[in-house]
Image 1 (cartoon, rainbow, N blue to C red):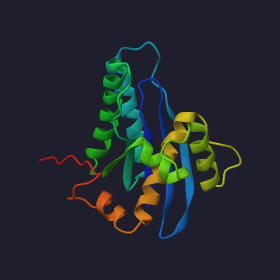
Image 2 (image 1 turned 180 degrees about the vertical axis):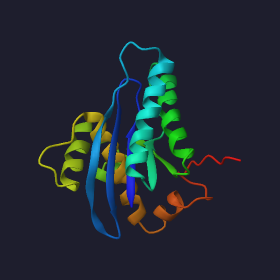
Image 3 (image 1 turned 120 degrees about the vertical axis):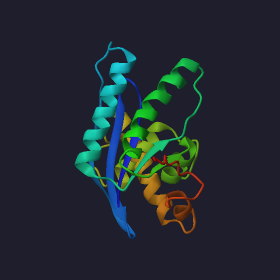
Image 4 (image 1 turned 90 degrees about the vertical axis):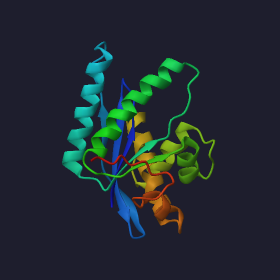
Length: 180
């Protein structure tokens, strides 16, 4: 199974592709960041994110796209703008029929470190260890995206939880858009 994890943002959208499953250790395929032009209008930056996600989807053909669930910032505008970036990424996957799975930030941290309140550095260290890398992935947004993808692979290996989250047509963490 190939999983694309995304850490959407309007300045930097981190992405990470991992392959795993069948109790095999996860393997890093690719990671990086989509960086829309700074200072561009929001609509232009969203288009660049959409196009960047499409390039990754076309190249990798993942079996699932995973993102963090929405959480509230102190600044409501930041929450709304982040929602726009998430939406264009989810739309790109939905238009291809790729299942989209959301995980709460605490769920990602718990899956990787055993603690839902772990710090970013701890999560990045566990991404490095799980993928057997010499250094943590950079940029930090890519490390976060890889953590989300690894969380999904981990969830699929847990009896019951994975099937509920990943099977089409069931409720749970899966959010799927149906087109006519």
